[in-house]
Every structure is written in structure tokens, then in C-alpha cells.
Length: 190
Image (cartoon, rainbow, N blue to C red; front, side):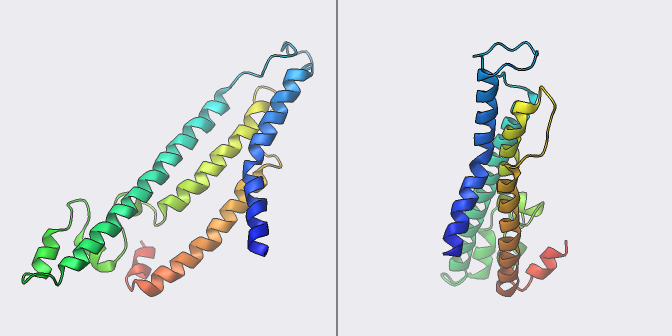
């Protein structure tokens, strides 16, 4: 029950920047802006922070998709490599030839991806997912950008709780990887 309640809270919390951005925009549309020159009934214009948030969101979304694709390709190639080890007479030699040029033999023998984005960070999809929601939070800050900028508001609880959840699950997956792959500990030390 706790997990299902927490999931509902988390979904509501990570969507809260939309509510804050919408309510701020509606307030500016229907109330005078205190002499700033905005006419009642006109929506607030997009600003540079909206553009930055959009750009970052798209970059991190592409990064997450690329990390997922790299992991998918690696797991498929690893499965092919393992199956080719014992299928014909040449065994190990033919399996070694089947390794793609961008992956190393060490990746396959270690059992986990270490090239591409995985050469930079051990869990690139986790990092990108967290960054997506942090950049999404910027949409709640953007409506106040042209007035007094407040970089911190209550809707930050969504991305903060999501990051805490990812940190906890990341530690768990790291422990699982260390028990499953003997060389993973050495990989962590890099």
C-alpha cells in the first residue's frame, strides 16, 4: 500500500510545475500586473528560461533514449556472443569476431556495457531521467522570470523526491550488479 500511495503522490508532485506555471499565467492574464504594462487578458510571453527548459528537456530526453538503445543493442549482442561460444567448432574465435567495433571484448566478458554513454556514467538513463524532471521544474520558475525571479518553489518537491527515489534504487541496482558481475566493483572505482 505504501508504494502505491507514494507512486500517486510522486506522479502528482512531478506534474506540479505544470500547475504552478498555469496558475501563474492565468493570474497574470486576469489580474493587473502592477504597472508592468501588460494588458489584462493577454497571456504572458515566453521568455529565455522557457527556451532553456525546453532545450534541456529535449537534450535529456534524447540522451535517455540513446542510453536505452545502447543498452538494448549491447544486451542483444551479448546474447548473440554467448550463444556463438559453443555452437560451432571454432567457438571462442568466432564469438570474438562477432563483437562490434564500438564495443570491446572486455564488455562481453565482464557482462555489462562500458562504451558509449556508459563510458561516461554507469547509469546514463537514470541520470537523464532525473535531469528531465529537473529541467521540467524550470517551467514553474519561468513565469516569474520577467519579474522578481524565484528559483525555488513548492513544486520542486516532485523532482527532489524523484531524485531521492532514483538514488535509493540506484544503490540497490549497483549492489545487484556487484553480486552478478565480479568485475563491476573495479568498474565502479573508475
